Image 1 (cartoon, rainbow, N blue to C red):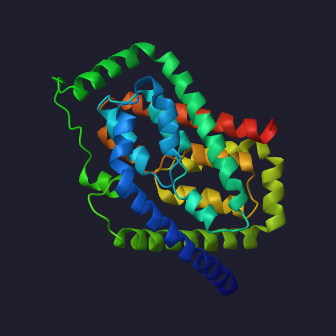
Image 2 (image 1 turned 90 degrees about the vertical axis):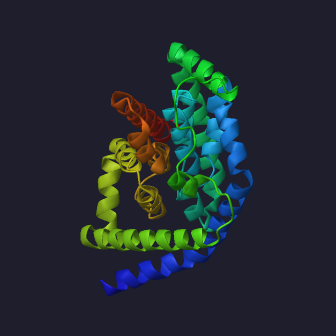
Length: 294
């Protein structure tokens, strides 16, 4: 057990400096462009899924939180919201950047997620045309200051902490790096123990024999509204336990804290489960398609 822990600690420690650099860069970008991007998403209308997919591909879950807050006030279409969710990779991108041997998958990963998000977003919006017309009218009235319905259109302080800053706070990326370091350490250790107990070859053989269920399994983990979910999925891929299609399924379903905000802000509870069902369905189909067709 000691050897497994030390191996997990050393691997996690190697990733920490690069993670810190990435999170500082994210902090600076969000400070400079966060409000402008939020405004573009809000005013996107019919181009919403495309803009949502591009903004959602930004590391971490900040823009999924913004999109959820806007959707709960009916300033975004359901297709745009799902496009943001599907394009979100939470902590996966910083983790991959910290692994030089895995960096080559970043471009295909991001581009594939963007394509899935755009296509799915427009298809979903096609089936919700009538609802979208009301949303466009409401968003237009709000933009002109003619909205006669009382809403809280501003993000809460906790949401701003994730996706928009009034000032640069370098303590935030340091704390976040430490949290992710702990997540990676714990998950690496637990995976190490699991592999030791079961046997690496036995685990791989089991997953290979049940490869059809890999994307389903990954998508179910990914939809858990916590950054630990993306860490688990990415670590499983790093250890060659799941394939690229399963990685895609898990990262497409993972919207991070956006789903927590959805449960908190969305008054129509049936709508929440409809969104989660569509998110899971699209993620699983995408993962299976990549795994067996491509």
